[in-house]
Length: 278
Image 1: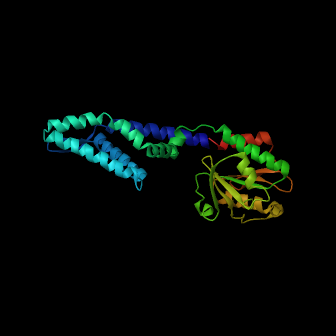
Image 2: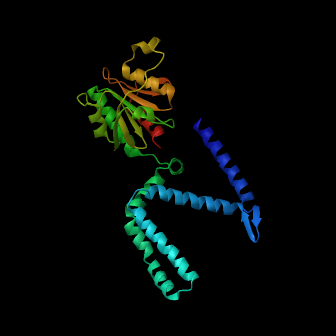
Image 3: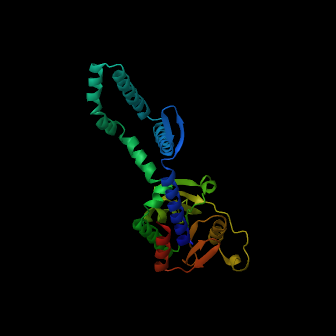
């Protein structure tokens, strides 16, 4: 299914590229001596998007005032050139050589936020997806440890369907995935052990999450515990992958799309995690 989806995306991308190249210099309309083409509209939209994104990043921060000052200096340099004030124009031109360094120094926290914002964009993550082997190892180590100790676990790997309605009623964690943190959360003496943890983009976002139980606990499902029923219930409503460790037997199960595979060993666990974490 994923290969078919990738092929369709490639075909769609080639089609869009072909149409774009063909109409790129197509003239939309003209105003007196000014001719407006497709790439002019794209250019204006791109600049507008960049400026709006910068506004959202800088809004409410100290850098907003500094940015306003820089914009005033730019506007002033345009005015003095138009007015042919050569002295002021020379002074502002010399100052402009240090503007780049000043921006890097003054806007260092904001520039970091911009880079993080770009890196967390779903489209960018899809283009430059890499397997996070460290995260696979952390989750695997935590599960194996809890299996040995027969501590119950319920780990939700969030998919494309959001789980905001569940996170709002849980304990917020927002910490990078680590084996030590997962083991401590599911320690029976921990106040967070009763419920699920939700992992999204290499981060444990929430713990003590209450999941919906399966609506059809019939047949074999009547013999399942609450964790397994909750995993089935969530998988029936979303595209999340859920890993469950039984506190009675230490058995590991993988639940997806209403189907539960029980008795996974370490090799099968590694395979599941490698397919999920990209």
